[in-house]
Image (tube, rainbow, N blue to C red; front, side, top):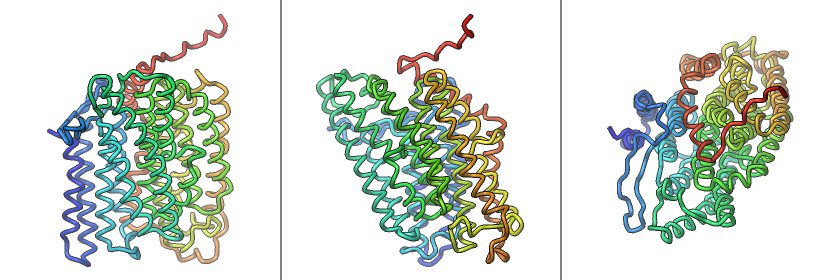
Length: 502
């Protein structure tokens, strides 16, 4: 079965069904979108069950001639890294639809348009992780901007138009740098045996160190903007603050992972020598991101900006794990991408419900929620604890692996990054104390707790956070061989353990 083509076609079919529904039938549009995303999730799980975890080669490979005169193919395939991220994306999609049942009301355009954009975006989320043709990857990478731009600018709040434009301009700038590097690779491939955009063939090109360094920067800056890594992060707080909670989940939980995924799939694979050259600088940027994001989060007064700032810190950990060049840190970074998707989803979804009930996103306005809305308060509390990597919750395992794996090669960076954990306790526990456990703020006395639909939406997210905290083995068994393969391709082996000087 052509699994990847099927996964990409299903959301498009759902979008076509939604578009064909009678105007004003909003309930049917929501149900069709939810049904479609559930079918895609089930199909992805079925594909994952058949994945051979010890096989580090691409699986479920498909290739169709697209523009033969330029050597462009519609080529798809997944390794363990892409599989894990596609699985995360397709699980989050129905949760976002169910949780944000009423998000589209009050937007500039119809409810139908909102769900068409969500379904088209799901197709692109799958395609960007599955593409094995560099031209196809770039097309999807850029095309993803369109539905996100309209989701933020059309259905967000506050300065949504400005935030959407800022997001678009930053992303387009990074994309243009990457496009220049892609064209250079294409030209070089023609001089060395035949024009191609195939990733495997491009990884075998011979190029000077100067050329490789310049092309690496073209890709890395584009991915650092998408991730985002300091100092390319400034679009994120505005976009997350203006977007609907569901859009923010897809933006930070999924789309930003394209940046860190790209660092592994393209930066390390296509430019191994340049990756080694720039690793010291990137490690410094990662540590700055960890601490800078944490300090911004501590000072945040708006709950949505708080979550956005925490993500800057988390992406610092992921980037550090990728470039630490050890199998442990690499496994931790990949697992971190998956876990961050769900911890961020829990934070944004619950925060969205809090904001819609209170009519405010200011943290100080949510005092005493534990007594008034206990289920909502405890859901936010668990999500917050996961974000600060409490042992027993999913993020702890990935953060621990990143720090331990980094310490074996870059002990100073790992030690400094560890302060990020201390700061995380401050930026999570202080707002939690103010919003959930403090005195009841006037105006909160009549707030309603989560309804059945909201409970059904948040329950699987909390369940995944807890389950992977206690038993991450199923995911790690899939991730570890791929992580080891990436490091071995780079020419690295894990540092030998110290014998204590004996």
